[in-house]
Image (cartoon, rainbow, N blue to C red; front, top):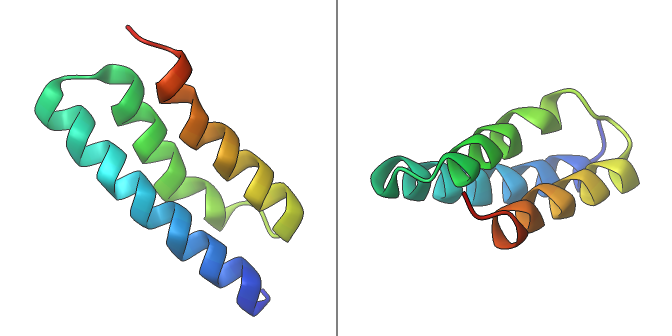
Length: 67
């Protein structure tokens, strides 16, 4: 793992924790699931460009999908 992958993983994990806490308090299912996914997915993706692309997509999902 490179340093950039670790830092991107830390960033996406932190944002994921925020989405998870928000989704749990507000009972927003989409934010809750995206937050959980943001905290977990950096463990499975080692390519930095793919990591950033998936992370940005997961961050954008709660803004476009409202349930």
